[in-house]
Image 1: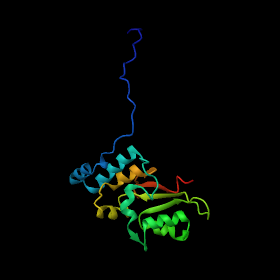
Image 2: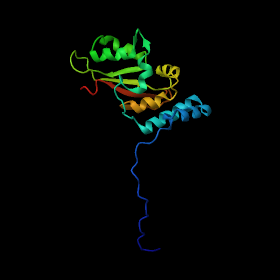
Image 3: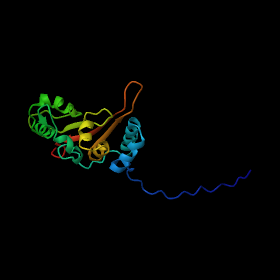
Image 4: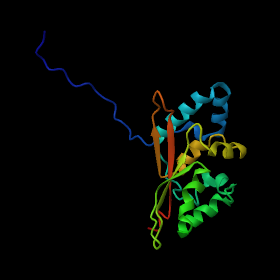
Length: 180
C-alpha cells in the first residue's frame, strides 16, 4: 500500500454540445424507418427524438408557421383554420374558438378575452399517436409532420404514458405573441 497520491485521470476537453439532432426531420430517414418498424414503436422513437431536441422556435405564430400550412387550408365547422385564427386575433365569436380548434386537434390553453389588446392565445397542437391532425398531414403526404411541427413551435410538452393512459405530446404555438 502506498501513501503516494495518484494524479487525477486526464480527461479529453469537452466540446460544447448543441441541440441533439432529430433524424426524423429527414423524410427519407422517416420512410426507411417506417418500412421496418411498427407504428407504435416508430411513434415512440420519434417522440423521444423530439423530446431530446426540444422546440425549434423557428416560427412560433400559428398563422405563419410553415409546418402548419396543410392544416390552415382545411375547412371544418364551416371555416378554414386560417380564418379561425384570424377571428381569434380579432376577438370575435369567442364562444366558438374552442370547438373550432378541437376539430383540428388544437386546445386553447390560455387567451386574453379582453375586447381590446392582443389575444396572446396559447394553442397546443396534439402531436400524439391519435391526433386529429394526422389525417390531414397524411393526405398531404407529410408523414414526419410531428418532427416538422416541433421545429416551428415555441414549446414541446410530452406526458409519459401510464398503465391507463397513452403517451400525450403537444406542440405549443402562439397567436399575437410578437404583438404583445
